[in-house]
Image (cartoon, rainbow, N blue to C red; front, side, top):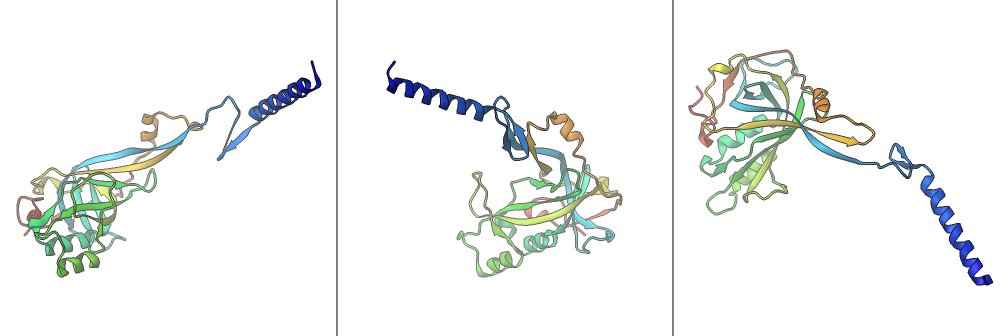
Length: 239
């Protein structure tokens, strides 16, 4: 073996030893430590905390403690969804727009900020298509006044779709739910929680769901219905 070949062999062995030692050393990934033979996985998934059918839109028959006096209620079969921000804007906006141009074809999908929180947030999404395809001065003023924004949706939807931000809390089902006139069209509400997962926490989906309870506040109340019949969401005029 000549000197050149010997040097090449020494260099090859040195490189292999270095790679082997590096692979066996611990490697920090976020807050987790792994070695060469440990696979680290991370990601997230949306966990549905609850699903419900909307019976009516209304307002509390009594003022709720620590809630805005103008709160709006989405009365569901299982729970009441008290809109504490954006509800009044929604009612006033719809009452001033031409109902012939309003289309609501998306269920109410809300997010929970924490796994056991009664709070939720999301958007009320609707389409508004005036005859000429553009908002007139009055409509544009209303949209600006009530904070309506063009939808930034990823999925393919109809044009002229807008979002109105809503926030609220989950309460027990309305005491007079059986006396409310049901909506003329099916309307669904869902609350989800974004669960971040990794291999360091190994739990089944069933175990996760058991740890994500909605904690509705104890107070129960009656609901006074609101006039959403103009856009086909109720069967009779509120009196």
